[in-house]
Image (tube, rainbow, N blue to C red):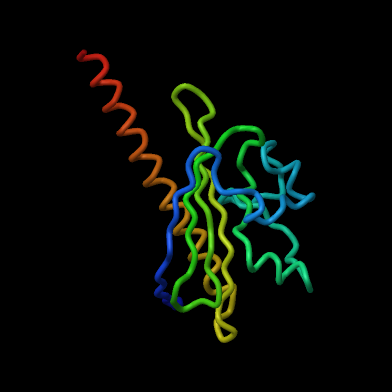
Length: 160
């Protein structure tokens, strides 16, 4: 018998084109993640996330005010970002970023980072797996949509 969990959130979303979200509004890249971000290091989980030690003390206060840095983004490649943050809902904090970077003529890297702080009464273990599964499902849907749009564009060009 499993536990069913649902949560409601209202989010504010903002688009940041032509260079993405200013770095001053993001957490710094953790030193432990620098090698894992593009080399596919072994510290990542099956969903592609990187497990890092949690911040403590004053680090925690500053992290909670910033958007998380997407660890799989490519340094030096311009990005377009979509940020989202909690307006109201069942969490103390819920904030993240979708980052898109064109990495070739017909390829785009989509990175995702999320900071979640549950209510004190809600065990993290209860929601972590659910959020990871939802992220994977969302990424698969975005990938299918992007591939369909690319094929449609190719067909339109071929017909001209």
